[in-house]
Length: 194
Ligand SMILES: Cc1cc2nc3c(=O)[nH]c(=O)nc-3n(C[C@H](O)[C@H](O)[C@H](O)COP(=O)(O)O)c2cc1C
Image 1 (cartoon, protein in one colour):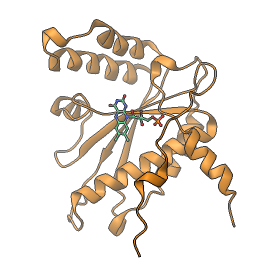
Image 2 (cartoon, rainbow, N blue to C red):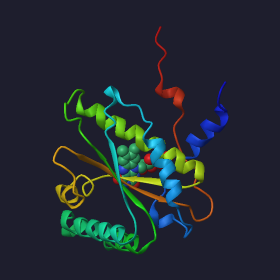
Image 3 (cartoon, rainbow, N blue to C red):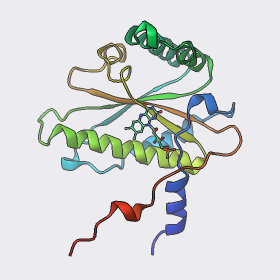
């Protein structure tokens, strides 16, 4: 065995989605993010199209992104469903010293493989990124949904028409211990066919 399997499995089990509201003030450094992005770049990719792309927002740019998300939340939420605390969460994220990564898929210009496969490759790259984050003890929260998939955010981020915004990734150390994860046992999801 070339690698320590129990360490690997432990890392995968301890990787956590942690929302920015649960972050401590401990800073995530650029060098750490660079390692995450290096790992992301080693995701599997059919036809070597390498469709994953990342925009790392920090400082004033992050602030503007979060304020824009707040306004999109207001725009997309019917009045009776609007929750002030959800809107405020974006305003608070604007003020926090955190990095937010916008992850998107760049379509192969020759369209050699089905577009879904390029989306899946991007998802694999996010998993690589999140595992490196976990190795540092950093939580990585993948946020998707209406705002992320909106034409408005697409345009704001300067994506091209054939790009697909796939998520916003928030990174941060937990306040105290990283929470425990929860999964149903794998055995029940597997059928051995002979
Ligand atoms: C493609 C994808 C999109 C996700 N989008 C959201 C989201 O919009 N909001 C959210 O609360 N969690 C989102 N999550 C994170 C899940 O909620 C999280 O993985 C789940 O709660 C299990 O927690 P764990 O990752 O810490 O094990 C997303 C996860 C994936 C893979």
